[in-house]
Amino acid sequence: MVGNGDEWRLDTRAVRAGQVRSSEMEQSEPIFATSSFVFANAAQAAARFSGQEPGNIYSRFTNPTVRVFEERLAAMEGGERCVGTASGMGAILSTCLALLKHGDHIVSSRAIFGTTVGLFNNLLSKFGVLTSFVPLADYAAWEAAIRPETRILFLETPSNPLTDIADIERLAGIAHRHGTLLVVDNCFCTPALQLPLSLGADLIIHSGTKYLDGQGRCVGGAIIGTKAVVGEAVFNCLRSGGASMSPFNAWVFLKGLETLGLRMRAHCEHAMKVAAHLERHPRVSRVYYAGLSSHPQHALARRQQRGFGGIVSFDVPGGREEAWRVIDRVRIFSITANLGDAKSTITHPATTTHGRLSVEERAEAGIGESLIRLSVGLEDPDDLCRDLDRALDAA
Ligand SMILES: *Cc1c(COP(=O)(O)O)cnc(C)c1O
Image 1 (tube, protein in one colour):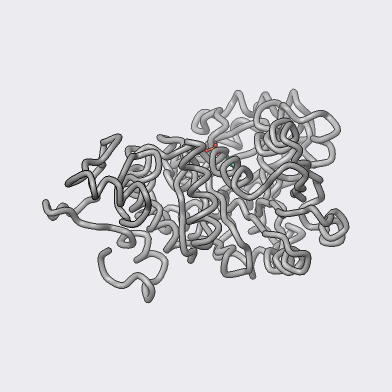
Image 2 (image 1 turned 90 degrees about the horizontal axis):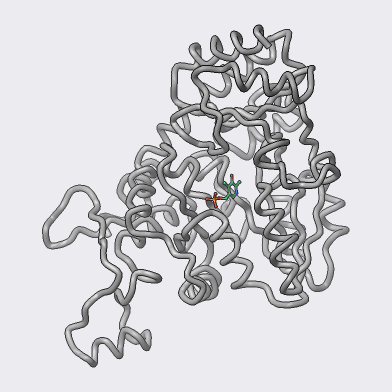
């Protein structure tokens, strides 16, 4: 490890934490494209496999490039340990497999990534793990949904796509009073804007696919928490479960972390401009962005986050038809479900990312047919506003 990471601020950790130079003295971190590692002798092989001697064995669970990514992200989130995973969903699945057993129960925010709802409802339920869903910011509902067998409270804040905000500290208090763990999917804010562990959360989930990469190249994920939970339980689950991060993807993500602070500041600034612009547009009926003073949880977002993020959603008055017309008329925004990219993206959540929810589930989550979600990228925000104006006026 280069230097002493403990006293470093976030941007220094993002660039420097976790790097171990090889004897080649490379400046940029190398990609260890190897599936396995060689031992000096049979005794060393035995010591490595038994865990007596730390070190590399096999890249499903020990790879130096993946380790640099893990140590850097752990340092940024202020966690003891991080493990990288093949995807954000791999991170959530590995966490659940590691911590839950038949009969256990999850309380989850209703306003989470659509595939996570599917994982809880359709997959974990097959193994006898049931999930209750509650409105993100209804603290009495969280408390009321907790049962003796509840092990995990799970949320995203800000939520996707409506940018609702939950008070992490308050939910951590509820979780710990009932002996459960608070798991926060920190994908939308990243450690550049929000540090859930410092607010009392126990585990952080990331989809590296989004802002950690930041240029839409790789799928990956991560889990951050204590040595006991992440370093033992989750790590061992991943070792057997196999949803591991590839060294190449780890390299893309760890280089992405070096520019994360800069990029997030720009995403926030651009999203603020776009949100304020949309709020003034006569063909927009409502804008969802925590940076706007009209947002119901603006004050909480100010207190809890260092910025309001890059996701802006809005309603148009004319339902699905008008929403689709706007989406089809923008020229700069890409029509794609990914977010957190340098390239701005636009989607219709009701028929894409949240299309597999039932009509009732979507209605409960507040995701209507007239809703459009933007991930505001790094293009000039004035160009983005003009592009949206042209599409809104033509639709
Ligand atoms: C995309 C996303 C995920 C899933 O991540 P993948 O890398 O696509 O598997 C989980 N949570 C949130 C909030 C996401 O946006």
